[in-house]
Length: 260
Ligand SMILES: O=C(O)CCC(=O)CC(=O)O
Image (cartoon, protein in one colour):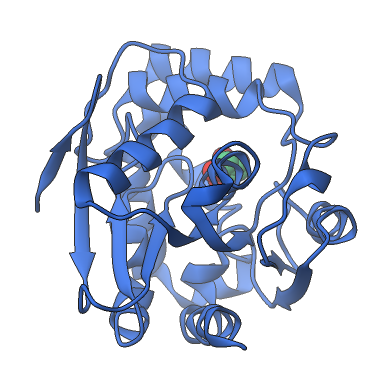
């Protein structure tokens, strides 16, 4: 897979689909890599020029010295679009990826066409838990927290019925570099866009998971109530609804992005 050398970071990315189609950027959640989008990429690339990347500090992207900020992660998306010669794109992010999308829509609105905010929130607390999580992974490695974190990504019933998917997500999370994970924990910890999201002007789809504990439907409904041109879909899923409901997730995103 190719790498883009930006100002201060090298990002791994992948492109799928015909370059003449509208561009769609997919942004991963904390502790995943661009492979988190494998269940959707074939469907999405029938309609879009799909750009996926490993967020700074994740997957095979560079781990630059932390802590990171959401502004830095948003700047990376602009740098990647510049690298690819793309001015404006649809943007879809899960959790931390969704926060990156909110930042872009607020601070670089000319780069964002339509916005999909999945399993995310304007603020994900509590503050001290992020500090403790960053310290834990620096001390004991990301693998030490992987089973507990992945238990929040899929509902218990679904996880029981899909043990191989659970193991694969635990492996993806466990492969995240500890310093990169910790630096991104601080970016999530220090982000609070609750008073700003009403400034988002991009047409926005908010996707919630009915069983999402880290970013419950109430967080999604807050985004719905604050963002002027927002719609809402709730899927029967936990925190990573694109993993638990791969087809419904792809259908929902495609319907929204292609609507008149
Ligand atoms: O998933 C994210 O990007 C941030 C929220 C998070 O890590 C939730 C969790 O699994 O505890």
